[in-house]
Image (tube, rainbow, N blue to C red; front, side, top):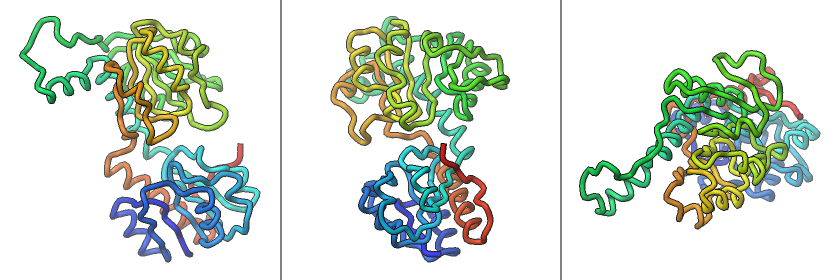
Length: 316
């Protein structure tokens, strides 16, 4: 089976792919454009794409040889699953492997932003620190505060466990479907109520249904001392509305691992001291990326052997 891998992967994953398939490893760092995706669909039996690769509906307009898109990542908003299905192309992802790592980044952003860790390090590195002072770099205590989760899937529940059991936080959550048992003490509420917590963590899937879910109206429900954390997809949050809320002091700060137009980060965000900005580190741990890659290999192998891939997606 002729396979295209759209971006460099950990050595262990590439070795497993090379041992099993006729693989082309693409060494460019930029995502596949629509034209490149269309050419890949016509030229390969299988493709291992990842975040940003443009497998939109126009990419499926021409001849399609590929039988599977074995996505590297749990999020697949860059793939039109319905268009793929119409052309007989299976789509898989890598759920589970990313859960704990992404939840860890949410907690990292909460602590860094509330305790002003990023601003403090910048001050120290710039040589501006003159020693300990009782009122220097005062931040916000995290323990015992309330958590509002926007999305209570695998990652949302992992964040909730860390915050409730680790920091004694009261958890409320907004979820598009009713969740009878979240697995810990937590109250399901509407979006406005969830946005009213001390810390709001966005953990919903990306895609048209959630684009700008957190816009001006949702942000207006936040308290002046609250923090917004986004570990989902950048366009779930209306970046312009968030910048306005931060500049006007209507919320205390934000911690972001994702952005609307990655890798572009607005200058207005860069200029804000009470904002922690990470370069999409959610799953950036070697063992996690290896696990994701091996799940993708398992999905490819299953299709090659005539079995149903273990992580097969279906059109909504």
